[in-house]
Length: 159
Image (cartoon, rainbow, N blue to C red):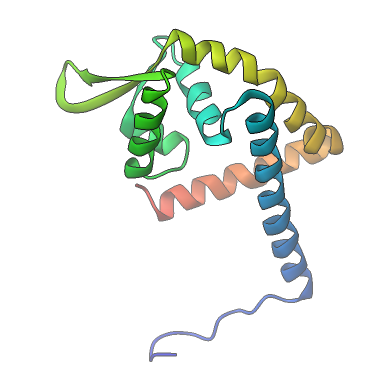
């Protein structure tokens, strides 16, 4: 430890149990949802998330930088992902007419069809593996906890 660094507040048994339960369950849940989409609909969970975000926009497009924020990814990673999805015909990239540096990712008809095909698989998985396992009160607490964490982490790392 260097001068000026305080001794860490080590986790007690209950805190460690909560942290480890969250960590393992979140990894397992993401992996399960990914496998179900890949096996049933030949799409990754990450690609599904991009298609959902684009589909929710009135014009079915979004600036790449905003998309990266919404899917909690780096601009570079989203750029590579969009390039791969563009080769598959799921999205297209268009320059922003008002800003020569800005680039939009846009949902194609094929991308919308893939989203419609995969959505039932995803919703069944989310329902089966988390939503239906929680009471409405637990769902509300979970949402509040993760909205608070999301806000905190976006403030700590605003990129």
